[in-house]
Amino acid sequence: MDLEAVRTFAAIAEAGQFQKAAVDLSVTQQAVSKRIAALERDLGVRLFTRTPRGAELTIDGQAFLPHARELLRVAERAVASVRTGHRPLRVDVINSRGAASGLMRGFHRAHPEIDLDVVMLFDVETAVTAIRSGAIDASFRAVAAPGRPLPEDIESVRVLDEPLQLLTGPAHALAGAKSVTVAQLAGHRIWMPGIVPGTEWAAYYDDLVAEFGLTIEATGPNFGSDALLDTIADTPALATFMSEQMRLVWPVGHDLRRIPVTDPTPVYPHSLLWHRDNPHPALATLRTHLAAASPGGDTAGTWAPGWVIPR
Image (cartoon, rainbow, N blue to C red; front, side):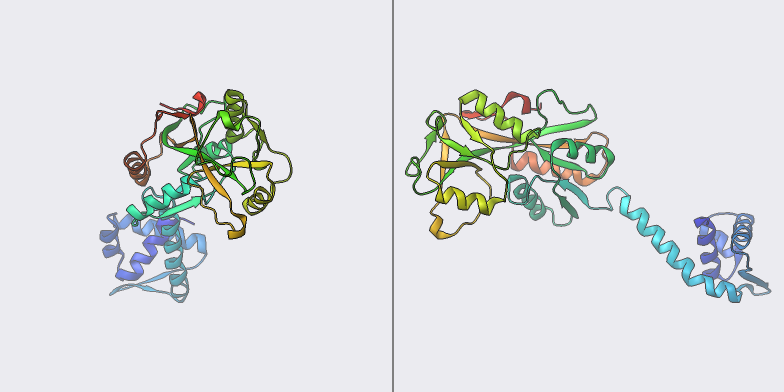
């Protein structure tokens, strides 16, 4: 069904005249007549009766009018849902408790007028596919693993280097330290069951192990952060890495310790990824906000693998 013909039908019903509807629609009266004739052929009924006063709806026209108006409203909503600047900005964060989620909360506080959809995809390849298809507008990632560069149509900028901390239970050998150096972690078991082979965060920790000779174990099922905290609290031989901005709450009896790591401080490098041809105006606003709030780049005394540094 031709939506322009339906729109013309509704305009004539409102105006009561073919000629006035033509003026309202900025088309010729001949075009109006042709549209209505085509619509009547499609429907198999007459919609108007010509009278000296203008055009009156037939019984079939009266029956069709409310549905025609609803059809036009649905069409307008469909167009608005994808029109640049009229749909929410869709942004991917890796989890709801991490630094990227915090950055988006800050952006929302600064720009409450911008509608947001925040989603959580699995890995960088899934995120890049979603960016290229238009399913999302941007993603916070550690860019790409070695040998898997970003496609040429994907832009990226470093927005935040998030320090890692050591999380231990009260009986761990390092529990009383105010800070620990990376060298002091050698020989200690760091348990991180959430590492998934092939992901960008797995590549990050592989490089960390190779650079400093650490022991990071990803054995056992991943039952989530609560189970991880329970195990760390009860097992003196285990510790884990926790990003500085990870928001977690644990029972008082766990007495867990978050200990800064220094000389150098391992940082997880968050970058914003987007398609270079994405015209959503809020995307530019997000990039400006991140540049002002969280300038990226290397900081003295920190470590991040070279393959995650976009320029």
